Image 1 (tube, rainbow, N blue to C red):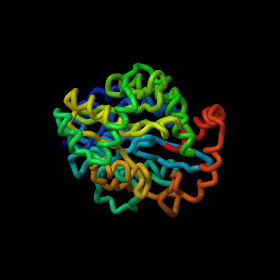
Image 2 (image 1 turned 120 degrees about the horizontal axis):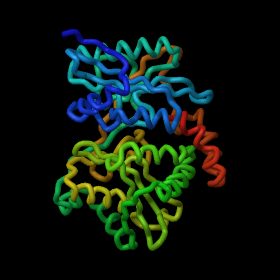
Image 3 (image 1 turned 180 degrees about the horizontal axis):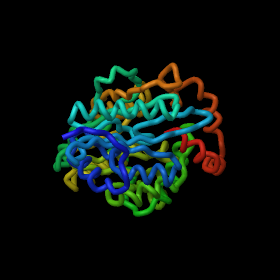
Image 4 (image 1 turned 90 degrees about the vertical axis):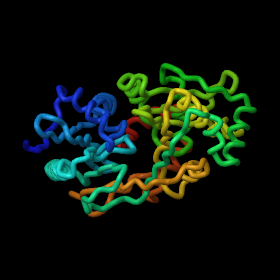
Length: 343
């Protein structure tokens, strides 16, 4: 049987997703539906590669191009996703997929190829040592889950309960978008279009859910979470400025999601990616989660250094500071064309 790599076709979707569901190295971000989301909602050209042997898929690598006059041109696996890269238990398939991706990046003339690995590979390519993920098991016993959270954070959760905060799962994305747009503007980051959130909800259905946190009749926080196998990953979350005066607002939101997920039989809580030495990084550590380095790898084509597109880069500091001062309607109008290129 010959091992080969080729571009995935629409007719490969069912077999692709069956492989992803059972492949230990695969994540939610390897699902075939991301091709429709990235192309349809954000306009990014995708190149999904698969390795097959004897007619069976033995490895996958989803990729997409992201072009920007401000941030450069890259081929990424996968933009807007915290995990990605090559998913296969087969070392030969991994090598062939990596070689094909490198050849594609060279042919396209990108600045760099980026693989957002969850685990290190043997590529020998440069690695960006910036991002960490936070994951740990949870149980069906929510008393035990609460006790596993350190005392100070547990006290903040209880303060959120005393503040009258209530969690509510909702169907649409309108309420979340209002909260999230204000949250990222306050951080100095452009917000993507609501169409993108709607595309995620439509594509992944019950594996993509929205939890809103209310105080009385006012939405003060919200989070969109992804579900994959036995895991939950809170992904797009935020809170409004008023939440700063509510004790334990964000603590309550993430606890309410953990509690609900445990009740459904979820066994892994994935707190997601954060940059080291930042507030979110410390927040997650203080919840009792151990940081795990994400070894993002880069094959440099037309760039002589690893790309560094993040708000902590001094090159973008003036833009961040200016964005924080924009009126929210203006930020929401100007944000989506920029955000689609951040990836």
